[in-house]
Length: 283
Image 1 (cartoon, rainbow, N blue to C red):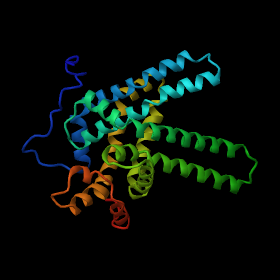
Image 2: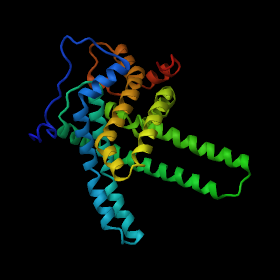
Image 3: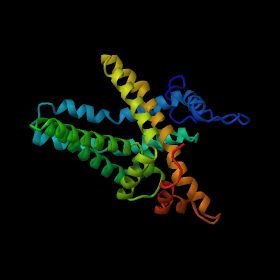
Image 4: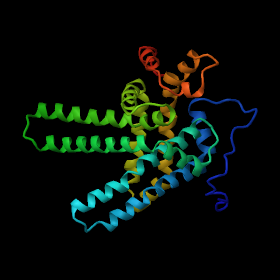
């Protein structure tokens, strides 16, 4: 696709890094990479949003349907969002790692390869999110003494926060390693605490951006979809992927000899995260 003045050319590789450019770290690296990948990130965000179009259409079309008919139809149109999220996260990871990307082919290729797991994860996340939300509203209606009310709501909110933090890692782990569903959730839970301060920063930034975006009417929604969606995804990846790299990838590569195949490197070793969990704090 040639695109429109190069803006929507999904197959054009990025500029990359200059040969003799001095390596940058921290915030300087983040802003440099984000500036260089800004238009590419916007394209990735548009592509991800396009995957929501069938769902939006079916929600409008089924507005007058009875619940027993509407909910199954909507559920079927929700399922493709799991693979779409896997493809979007893969693109974000490639941009964070400064790897070349062919947006359309990589996005849909990863979505296809991870279809089964991503759909299962999407369903589990939906069920857990539904239960947490209903638990909060249910306990809010009970006539409890003030202290018990605070304790129950505190536990519910903390549980929801932990689950949100886990989702900062689940899809990245899925597209990076060969893991079972149980391993994905278990290791995402561990990373929630290993990278806690990073997760808190990401959640704070997301909360601020979403709050202000959704309080400016239709203009806020447009700006969020056009710019902030991919920006927040890139921030999340830039903050969380280095933790995965330090705890899982680096020790695995150091502990394997030159004869180790890439497939073997992609298989998770339980001992790696157990050892690093006891090691130094996230830096």
